[in-house]
Length: 353
Image 1 (cartoon, rainbow, N blue to C red):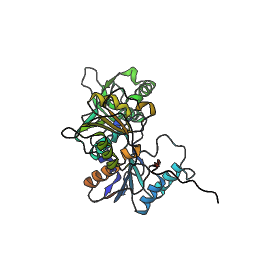
Image 2 (image 1 turned 90 degrees about the vertical axis):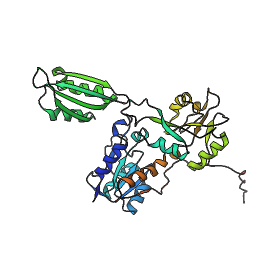
Image 3 (image 1 turned 135 degrees about the vertical axis):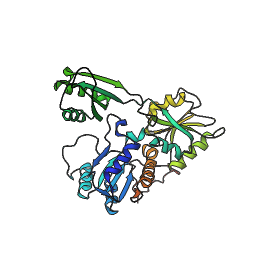
Image 4 (image 1 turned 120 degrees about the vertical axis):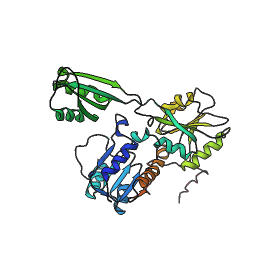
């Protein structure tokens, strides 16, 4: 039985629903035909020209990436710049691009869980459950054109939009419900007002806590017994993530509880300390954030690519298990744009000839 991109998208959306993404993010099927057939998938962190060339060489029909290729609206697609060349090649070679970014960061068994597993931590759980980015809206109106109202809700990126008849003394009332990102609520209200829908009925906005226990930010876990020493821990992190150098601040005697966050997660530092962690492993830490007011705590920057690339392997494993007839592989291309120079000896001076 053939597998279509639409089925891959549905599976990924069940693991990491698009509605839990951050406001600025762009996830889902960014390029390609949802009804196209898939026999081979490439997973990666970044979509570069080299990754696309690899996909073309291997006859891959779909790339599943963590970082979006397209963040904002684009006015044209032509091979005159890197983004244009990539999109142009994807379309020309019938390769789809499916992205799970901040929605996968927030998902159970997502990016931070993968990082925690790489470090050998046990008893994993979300570090923060403060992840209420969506709101539920409810509109009760006499408007008779159901499709028009649903189309308007979809225009403002409302998800799970549906309607039902309201049992009331007033005949002809309909209730429309949907989930919408907080930043789109005011624009939706203005659109409803322009269409006269707010005058005809009532509009409610309901806060949602975390959509379920399956979403949050960061992960905390632990090592058994009394934990491990600082140098042993730093060595473990370097070996697990294959990094040559680690930036860190602080000092600890023993590390048992460890918080992690793939990508830029220093904003979770206070929560990690409050949760009893002796270390936070993350990336993209700014200079002033390295100053610590807490003794016996280690703040570690392993690099953005290094903290997130393991999710490409996790994507491969999940997709391979779900779609047994599809070949899934992780890119061989290293897309990390950062390089580290580690000097072991004093460089020799070049003598003039």
